[in-house]
Length: 310
Image 1: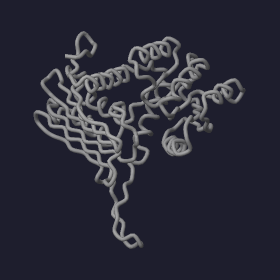
Image 2: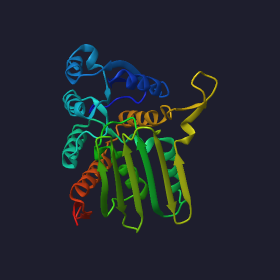
Image 3: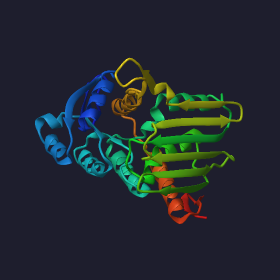
Image 4: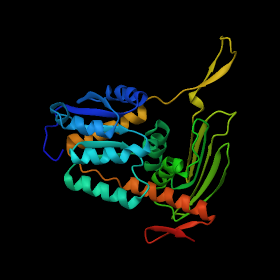
């Protein structure tokens, strides 16, 4: 990737992930010009061996949609073989280590995109556009509910996408963070309060594993001159006429977010634009601060670029 290339040359991408993710990757790639889907792999060792073959040497980039514990290995293999890398966030829970990885890739001229997919959902893109255009004025209050009954984890790190979204919409790191909640054998509930430099605030709550109810997501943003609201109700489809009687089916938002992310990744490679993953370091710092606050039952405050207990 450090070598110059023609912008008209086809980029050859390989996917690393499970079959459902590979299917979504294939559908998304069909909407992007100038790329070739060269197949899929899963284990880092297999990808390493592939890169040493004549076939693997022709691969330009890898798109890694893998569990957290597998991402670090793929980062190392991609760097060793000078392959551009698209990898699901987070790659580490240490902001300094992320900064080191980012620096190494940039100095080697290897594109690295750590994907914060929540930013690229249709609702988030629409609201951010309204904020950037000034239609909402100065953001004042952000409220996010996420009730996830398909997940079995109780880790605060599951809050990272929404914490990143809050920082992105306000355009700044919060000055204070306070996390409360509880964890039980049946699930977990966490609520995070964020205080921003302009007097704005965000309140994010995340419930996991409470059986007997449907998943639900909503976002409200109130600005000085306008407000925006989004939820996933439009993804609930009512079904009639079968033996089960009337029921609802929750559908997804398609492959829009992945398609937008892949387009950005491909453009970075084709235009040889240096990548900067500062937003990933910020997101990890925020989530670590939320965890610090929860474990100590005290607010965390931003002082000289670091979060410490108040």
